[in-house]
Length: 169
Image (cartoon, rainbow, N blue to C red):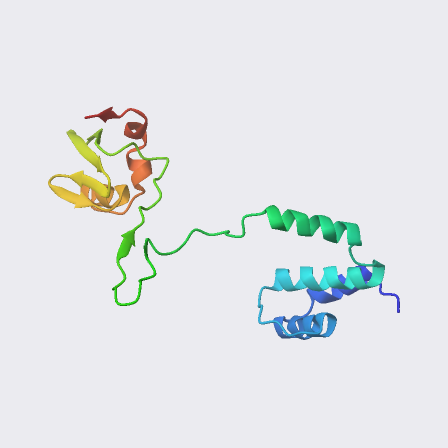
């Protein structure tokens, strides 16, 4: 059976999500829980084309497998900042603190950010875990900017000129 791929893809564009899921099941032989219309249309169109014109060659599959072996499988950073060591029998697990990644936009701890604001000279000290301003430690530059201005604003934007001209103590 020969398929006209362009007509099939045009017809896919008019289907509802439920109909696309059914078409996916028909083409792939398995159900999907996906509800992203664009992804479903692309996957179904790819499969229809592969069925009509032939799939990847064995050489291409081998090359893809080689590339996959060399790739780092982790795409996202771990969500937790602490992990535990596997305990020996009879011992309780001891948590290990894993430092959060350092933001490259921030100066090193100990740096004083100075910025004029409403006839005042503001001084914010960069700490290893936060920012000190007026005797209070804030978790982010945005929190410091909110404390100063009274409204939410981007901390990097508020301190943009001082992040480039910083003084270290």
